[in-house]
Length: 66
Image (cartoon, rainbow, N blue to C red):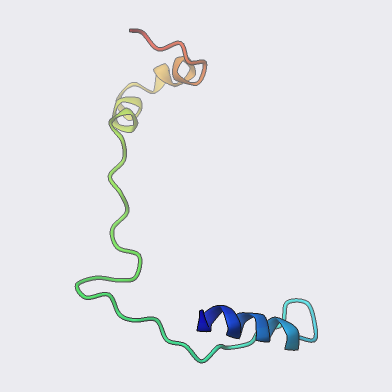
């Protein structure tokens, strides 16, 4: 809630569009990694389309064989 209050206060005091106000908060470190972590693994269809790119138009048309 403190971050929201500080943000609202900063919005009241910014004089020009695009102005910057640095808030007095620091993000906590995440143990064992960076703040974003690893990206999720791509779904299997990505590997299939990479191996069979000519089937992409059928996928986009939703004409997928059963």
